[in-house]
Image (cartoon, rainbow, N blue to C red; front, side):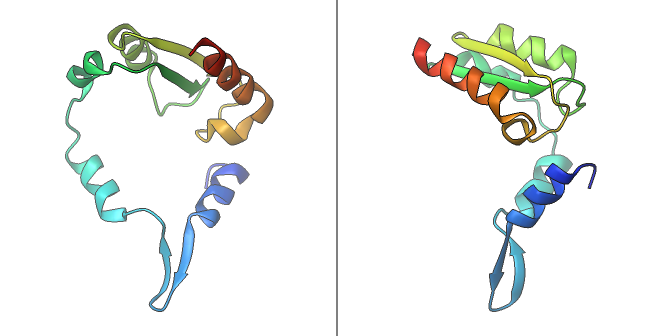
Length: 108
């Protein structure tokens, strides 16, 4: 794990079943998403609802180019970068994240 927040997220994503511990999400679906990295940018202009787009500054999960492209393709998009570099943007700096979230809710 690259941070304590990532570790916490991982541990909170485990569920105990009769077969042992498993992830709450499908690891097969995640692996398929990585293996079949298909461009999805063409879908973004079709989004009709308001969108809050948040990324962690300094995290390489979303490149600067892709972040800008997403903003330009989503018609009703409010975009922000949170200062904490952790991929779990809602946990890295809760006050900053929820400040942006509240701003978004007030606009819609």
